[in-house]
Amino acid sequence: MNILTILDEYTEALVEDISVELWCKENYSRAQKVYQGIDPRDEPTEDDVPATNIILLSKKTGDSLLTYDYGLAIMCTIYDETKTTATTGDTILTKYTGVRNIEEYRKLVETCIVNVDTGANGNVTGLRIDELDIDYEMIEFFPYFKADMVFGFVNDRYQGDDTFA
Image (cartoon, rainbow, N blue to C red; front, side, top):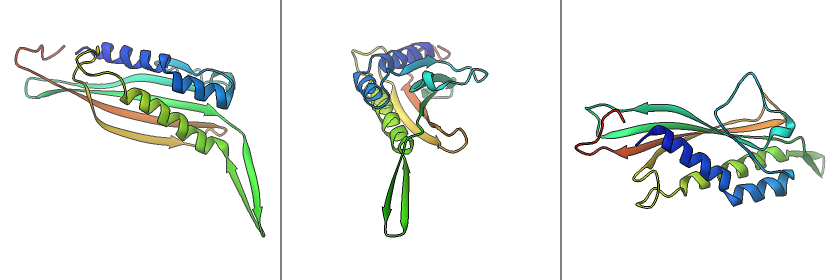
């Protein structure tokens, strides 16, 4: 399996996912932007989000391994200054909408990735998700909310496979 095939297949799935598109339009009145790669010198503006970046992280292979291991990072970003306030007695509760929305957005993106056809009809046949790590950033870049997912994918190797494909 070629790592670029994996990158392209998952990017295409994100671009075409109707659930993500509808959620973005409903909550932010615009479609998401999908980027293959990221330029840290050119941070997104309010008009550039919701955004999903997908980048290659790792590939592990070798004659002593029984699998090909791949790592992809998928980063979701929204911009949201909205908050609600409620008072109960003397207690004031303030909720920032971005806290809930970044998780909803991230979960839709995750579902899109998980649902990519890896069966006999898919271009990434036999690929499976071995692990998923999720990190959130809700303070440092406020009012930007970020959720980073690191997917660990595994594909079995068989006798005769090109070890370094």
